[in-house]
Length: 273
Ligand code: HXC
Image (cartoon, rainbow, N blue to C red; front, top):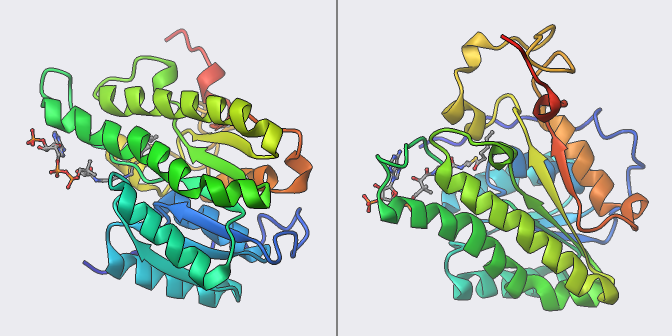
């Protein structure tokens, strides 16, 4: 399978932040080979950090690492691991430390998704998504926490807004992401005294992502002037990128245990049709 074309999304969009605020910092990102987490990694690298992207598909990780390194002038390396396998994550962390000597930021973004009703979903299908999203986040935290404590670093967990209401055909992801939100809150409270922060970014309808294309027919959605969105448009990858840079920056040094929907206000909109 050929890798997706590189989308340079944040060159202009995160210019509100100074260019080198993450100089000398290191990001560890699961799910960074594609989609939202690739864009989040790009944004952090554009502000001076080096990165390790973690996933199951080494070919895609290798290609993405090359693209991100060339686009940002920083160094990105791949680390192959399935987040359901604690030892593989520990090996990825060891590779990170060997290469860069530290970890300052972690993005827990590896996720699985497909549409299936409760009736049509096997026990193993439900368990698989819980294991990737929720257990995978726990495993990532366990593997990285000693290094995040040492750097007084910060976590961002990539969740969703699906579970705020009953979203059909999404029982597995809804349950899994509710668990991720809870995990982040506990992490924030337990590790706050050690200077570690933990927050959640909950992307809503973000155009051009695998999640959106799986869940919605994008062809019927307009980019601008769409009354289904309070802000008149779907989200962009750059909207998530900006929130990422903010949460990892010192500007957010008193922000922890928060869940930040990047959804253009959709979750607050009631229609009477
Ligand atoms: C029903 C399915 C299925 C489907 C898999 N299964 N796909 N059941 N409908 N479309 C079932 C299988 O039959 C099997 O159960 C079990 O799930 C495990 O499947 P495997 O393929 O063996 O597992 P694995 O190789 O580990 O891969 C599972 C997966 C993958 C990671 C979930 O199928 C997948 O969907 N990958 C896409 C990743 C993705 O889309 N990431 C972006 C997430 S976006 P049985 O009983 O047969 O053994 C996101 C945010 C959402 O999460 C918010 C958007 C707005």
